[in-house]
Amino acid sequence: MQSFSPLGLTAVDLSGQIVGRIESTYPYDGTTPEFAVIRLDLRAGLGQTRLVPLTGSLRYDDTLQFMHTFA
Image 1 (spheres, rainbow, N blue to C red):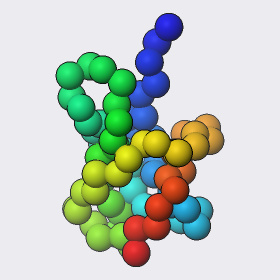
Image 2 (image 1 turned 135 degrees about the vertical axis):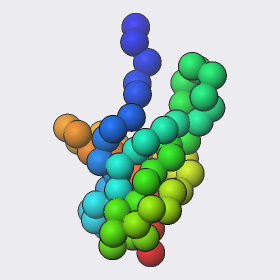
Image 3 (image 1 turned 135 degrees about the horizontal axis):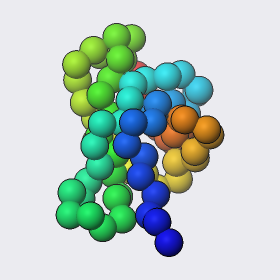
C-alpha cells in the first residue's frame, strides 16, 4: 500500500480559507509524515512557512483542510 503524501496540495484552514501550498513534510526520512510544511500565500504572509500537524486534517480533491486557523 502506498503511503499518503500531501505534497503540492492546497492548504485550507478551519474556516475554509486557502492559506497556501504544502511544500514539504516532516519527518523527512520516508516514514509516515506527521507534519506539513506550508508555504503561506499573500493573505496569510507571503513567503513565510508554517509547520502544522497533519492529525485531524481532511483531504478534499487537491486540498487539505487543517483543524487550525492561520490568522
